[in-house]
Image (tube, rainbow, N blue to C red):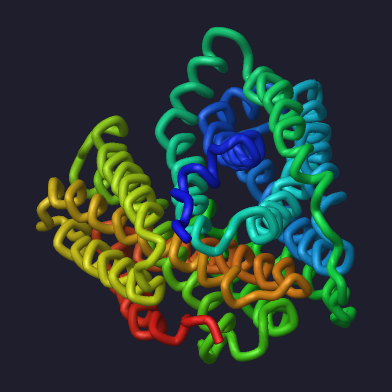
Length: 446
C-alpha cells in the first residue's frame, strides 16, 4: 500500500487549518518575544526609568517557566484540550493589559500573563502535534515550526520599530490580538477531537514548588545577563544554586547524566540551545565593540543564521526516513564548528567577516539538530508523559540560555573588555556543543 505524501497530511483537507493555526500561535509568541525589544526603549521612556529596562523581559521569562510546568502536568493528566484554549486566552489577555498600560506595574502584569500563556501554549502544541500527526509527518511539522520561529526573528524587530515610530508602542501588543483569536479558531476543530489519556499520569510531587524555584532562578539569571556587573555575577551564582535542585525535580531522571532515551534528548536540547543562543546574544556586541561594526552590519550574521536554520529545517522535513540521532550529531557538529570558529572573530586581532559564514553554518546545525530533537522527544514519549517530557525540554532551553547569557554578563563584569571576555565565553560554548555531539547517539527512542 502506498504511503500518502507528507505534504498531504500537513495541508490536506483534514489538517490544513490546524497546521496553519499551530504556525500562527508559535509565530505570535516568537514575534512578541523578539519584537518587544524594539519597542521597549519607547515603553520605558513613557512609563519608567532606564534602570527598570530589564524587568519586562524578566517578568515574561519568570512566568513562562511556571506556565511550561503547569501546562505539561495538565496535558498529561487530562489532555491538552483545555490548555490549547486557555493558554492563548491568557496570552491574549496579557497583550490587552500591556497594550493599554498607563503605568509600569500594569505593563509588568501584562508581561506576566503573556509569559504564563506562552509557556503553557508551547507545551500543549507539542502534545497536539503528537496526537494529530503521524510519526512520519512530524519531522516536516517541526520543520515548519522552526520557520515559524525564524521568520519573526527577521521581521519582528523592524516591524515593531516601525509600528512604535509611526503609531505607538501600545500597538505592538494590541495589534496581535485579532491574530490570536484567528489562531484559536483554526485549531478549534482539531481540539474538539482530542482524546484524554486512557491512563492519566501519576501525580509528581513537588512540581509546583520546583517550578516556582526554577522561575525565580531563571529570572535572576536573565536579569544578571542584562546587568554585566559584579552584583549581576553574584546573583547569577546564587540563581544556579537555586536552580540545580529544582531541575532535578522537573527533569526526567538521568538528564544530567544524559542517560539513553528521553533524558539524553532533554539534555541535548539544553546543550544545543545554550551554545547557539548565548553566542547569538553576544555576537552583535562582539562585532560592534571589538570591531567597530554598525548595529545594522552586526545583524548580518544573525540573519544568515536564521536563514540557515529555516533552510535546514525544511530540508530535513522532506526526509522523514533519515536517522534523527544521525541528523542531531551532524547538527551538533555544525554548531560546534560555527561556535569554535568565533574564536577567530572575538579577539581584537580577529577576522570579523568570518562571523557571517560561521553563523550560517551554526544556523544549519540548529535546523537539523533542533528539529531532530523535537521528533525524538515525541517518538520516545507516551500519551501519559508527553506533556512532562515536552515541558522538561522547553525548560532545558530556557535554563541553558539564561545560564550562559548570565555567564557572559559575569565575564564582562570581571574581565571588563569584550575582546577578552567573549573569547572565554565562546570557548565554553564550543565545548558545550562538542558534548552535545557526543550525547547525540544516546537519544534514540527506547
